[in-house]
Length: 257
Image 1 (cartoon, rainbow, N blue to C red):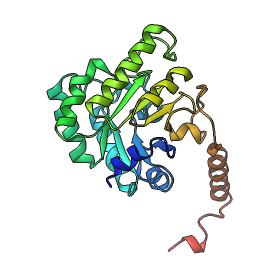
Image 2 (image 1 turned 90 degrees about the horizontal axis):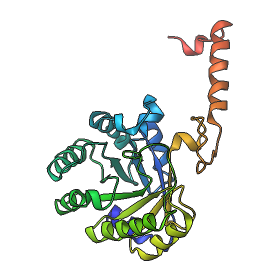
Image 3 (image 1 turned 180 degrees about the vertical axis):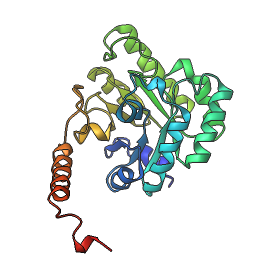
Image 4 (image 1 turned 30 degrees about the vertical axis):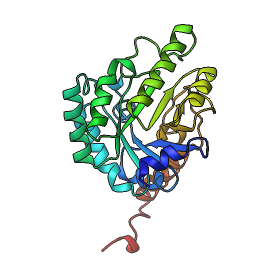
C-alpha cells in the first residue's frame, strides 16, 4: 500500500496527524509521530516575518523542502505550491514537476476549488498527487481572516468545491476555519479524508503549525493550542551558556583540544 493509500484508508477509522516542518531537525522528530509532514508556505510568517504567504517564493519552498526531506522517512511529505505558481495549467505542471523532482516530496497542496479545478485535474492527470485546501485561503484572502461557512452561499460553495475536488482525484482536503456544522457535513459526504485546521473535531485529521504548538510564536489565533512552552527551555539553555562563558567555566579541558 502506498503512503497516499494509507492516508485514504484512515477515513472513518483513525485520525490523521499532520504538522508543518521547514528543516531536517524538526522533520526528524515529527516523522516519529505524524502521518503527514507539510512544508507549508506558513514559513513566510514563521521564519521570514512576511506580512502574507503571497511573498513566499518557489525557491524558498524548494530549499526548505530539501532540508525537510532528509528528516522524513515514513511520513507522507506534502509541499505547498506558493502563490502565483499555479495560475494556469501549464504553469502549475511546470512548477509542480520542479517541486517533485528537486524535493522528492510525495504530493503538493493547492488552495481553492472550482477556480483552480483545471490545474488540479491537469496535475493529477500527469501523475502528481494533490492535497486540496478549502475554507480560509491565506494566499488569496482579502482583509481580515474570517471563518467560512456562515452564509448559505458559502455553505453551498464549500460543499460543491469539496465534491468537485474529490471527483477530480485529490486524496484529501484541508478545511481551514470552516464552521463546525458544515465541516461535519463535508466530512460525512466525502469518501476521502478531511484534515482540519480550526475546523472542529469532526474532520478525519488535524494540522497545525509546529512552531505554534511549541510556543515559539506569540500567536493568539483561536484554534492554536500551545502544547509546550519551548521558549522557556531555550532561555534556560542560552542563559546557562552565557554565564559559563563569562565565568570561564566553558570551554573546560573536556571541551578543548
